[in-house]
Length: 431
Picture 1 (cartoon, rainbow, N blue to C red):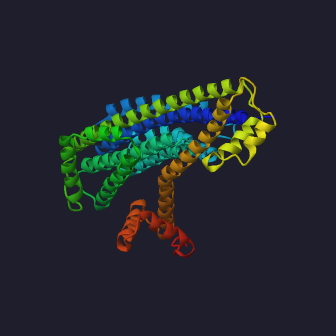
Picture 2 (spheres, one colour; picture 1 turned 60 degrees about the horizontal axis):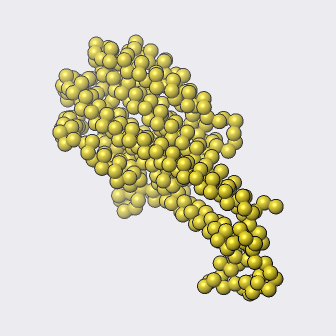
Picture 3 (cartoon, one colour; picture 1 turned 120 degrees about the vertical axis):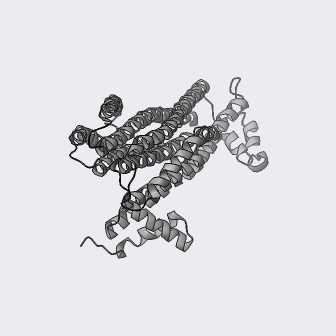
């Protein structure tokens, strides 16, 4: 008959398997982050190329395409290493669906590059294509964060996802500003888009600060030199305050691009540190779990007897009460033989109790961490609903919800829940 220790050993093996899967997921997230960074830079250079009517930045763009292609090969290799035959992968249905979408986008990437090369697409259309692909890559990171079963790793993944999302909004700002400067004309629609992107960056970085370690938050603060921020704010004012149709200095496009790139490169430093932290935590937790497993296995070599059950009832009573079982044990001559002393019984019971307490604590912390992800899901669903029913852009839908939150003195998540609750009565203008 299998004992409690047998199941403790089995539980620890399951925990190790989950941690090893998380380590592979963290490696996948790291490669995904590198590809996102490469595509972000490629997108910005493509906008400069298109904005100049192909007269500038062609060599830089081609060099970046080559770098992106190399990282894409690494990501495809990571995808190939995933166990697609197992039905036990955490968030498998959603994760694999996201990966399928990403692969479809990567397969279409050569066609997008060809359209840009021939200048067949405008900068806005090309940007939107890159945005969709990068959004798919970030969705893979989101599902990885949502599937984590260890709270410390989950917190780091949530911090990583929000930092990457904030960096993507910074990349979109770089691309939109590059196109505006290169075109030589201010555009009211693009100016509103820039303001939305700036606000979105700040929200993501706030969540990052909430879930990252103090050291990572400090690193981010250190990687924002005042001179770069001052120049960025100056150029933002130039772009966002010019009247619609006013002339912009096209020669400022590379200056803007370089300024935004310096900031994004510094963000990449923090992102790389997040990646190292993730892998370090995974490795440490796997090593600790393996040590525990060895201890459990060694303990199981000496099989406990029925006196374990007696100690369970004894320890279960307030003040160490025995429910009358201790005296029965002595009268019946159930004193354990040499090698089965009370220390062994108590060790096994304490292991069971410690495992239960640890799992409860992990569950409570995971609930807290995942609340942030669940809020994001609800807000995105509510935005999608408004976009579909009122034919709004993403920026307009988000602005509408934020305005509702301010007018009603409510949190954004509460407004999102209210919008979703009224899904059946919202006017559908698609008809």
